[in-house]
Image 1 (cartoon, rainbow, N blue to C red):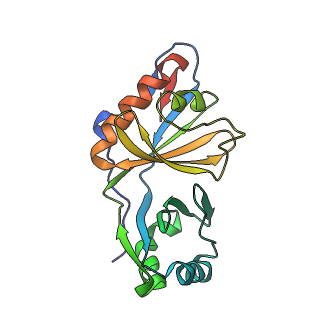
Image 2 (image 1 turned 45 degrees about the horizontal axis):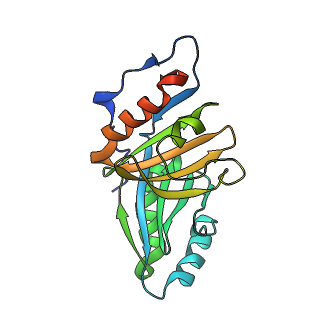
Image 3 (image 1 turned 30 degrees about the vertical axis):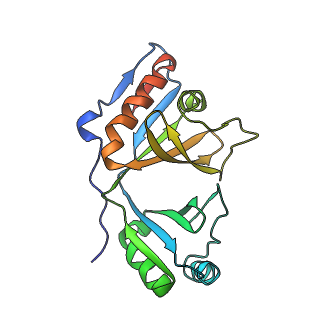
Length: 198
């Protein structure tokens, strides 16, 4: 059965439009819903073999620690050694989990996370400043740039964070039950800059 887009985790709490400081928009927040998510964990002693089949099936080299890599709508984000969060958008959304399972076979565990995670995109010239208020990561472009990723404690919960564009644009994934807390934190952090909920 094809993997379908996850339901919105934040719809009841999203109030589209401009908020915070008037007359300026330094941050844009957007929930990413048309996206499949999966967790990929290499079995003991199978990491090298897994890397080979991912290249064959997705034409992607599994990223090293604290990195992410994307191609053709598929993104692999390193969560910890031997474990990745995988997202699929566009055509890749429909069969991401099935394709991962077929490719990896007995080399890794694949767990569908599409309905278990909330995924938010934060962009704008003040996005870095808003995030810096809550994450214990140096987000200076010299230290953290496009393709970089981290799993970090933010305020009261764990997030997986990666940068997708130099603009800057970031994505944050949390367990679905923490979605409301994530949104509240981001709104509080972005209020002084003015922000749009898209």
